[in-house]
Image 1 (tube, rainbow, N blue to C red):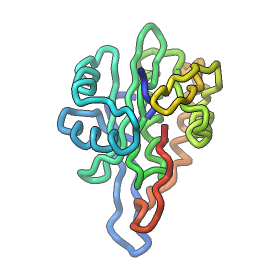
Image 2 (tube, one colour):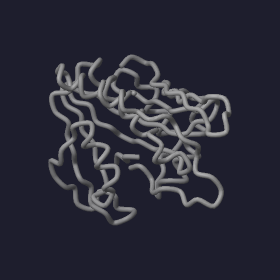
Image 3 (cartoon, rainbow, N blue to C red):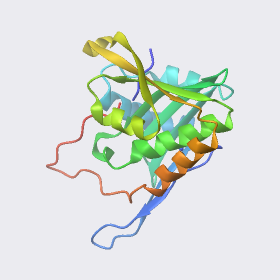
Image 4 (cartoon, one colour):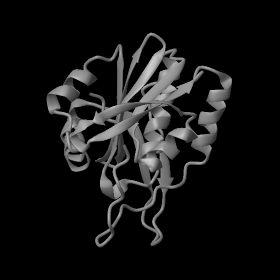
Length: 206
């Protein structure tokens, strides 16, 4: 089962400066490596009721011909991750996950931007994913990338007894879609601070 938890292997980075004048921080989106997996699994266990295992991630990142996985880092800290499978002109987003304290800061948007560009470079024409029907926040993000609803998979998220909305972005190989991605990157906001003590974390970006 796929959980929904930026194109060469590269990075989408944005700098920000804290209100107190602290040094600028950079969000880097880089290929997922074995050294990242301990942090990825730690986030996975915090945000998903049925987290992927270490073995499953190892299997995924050792299939570069059909898989692409990335992590978003602030300095040495992994704050999010995402992956996809690409076969016969179609790319399927398998997961997107962001640490609760870093959600609603554009981390998922940066990760999805990298995946979309990677899919284009791998000659995919269409991009698809599943998302919980109740997760309207994530759906709004996907609409920004051109995804539209195409159907419902009943009880797809069986651990929470919830259906999945299947969404597709078509014709991602076109110049129009390239311009869409450029527009999304141009609108990226500086990364804010993580949610501090006493602040309730946002719902998982999934």
